[in-house]
Length: 288
Image (cartoon, rainbow, N blue to C red):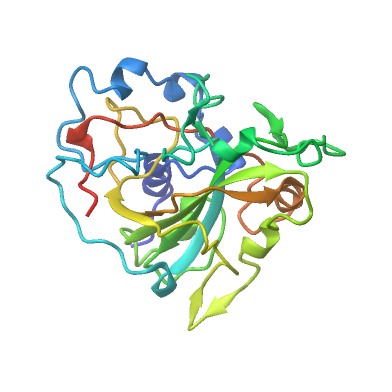
């Protein structure tokens, strides 16, 4: 049976992997994005019956959520299905722990890299034009972004939104998200985002990004969920995701991010908002 439009839209909403067009189509309005500070600090009833949630402080290894599932295979043994990024880091570590504020419906919140406060005037020089501009503004040198390379166990090609991670014969895939937090700089000597893109790259029969940074610390692996500002501890994500989060920041040339926003295989043209940090131990897995 073909995957119906209603079912696919429901899964896309559940995962929170939105392209610009799907946000508009699904009415991703302010009422859905509002997250209370009370919920995120673990007061009140947790999402009973849900599995471990994301994002989290990756330096805090504790968690008491009892819904255990197996880690997904290594991303090199899965197909890349989507790349997108969030403005500011959703996760937290000692290297990206500068709180950006409570924010507005997922924007102007999250965490910033420590190195963003140590940049030179040249690195912070204004860009010639707006970078990845959306309804919540554009990106500026010195900003932090968290990039997600989403991988699936389905035999699919990369594309826009979660629909690219599913197929008619593979509606409940294993998912793994490779994660890197970046500080954006106006410097052509910094990393080029296009070198971290997909662009038709195949390795051992799998769709793969051309590269993911390998010098920013050993990735912290844990069981969690999907993210995005529509979720709070009273409205949790039902999906099961294996995460690999690198604990250190890297510098990324903001101009190459702007080029990518103008032309990529994922119909991504702006930064997504962040989900507030999940701190309730009942909603976190143990990091081993």
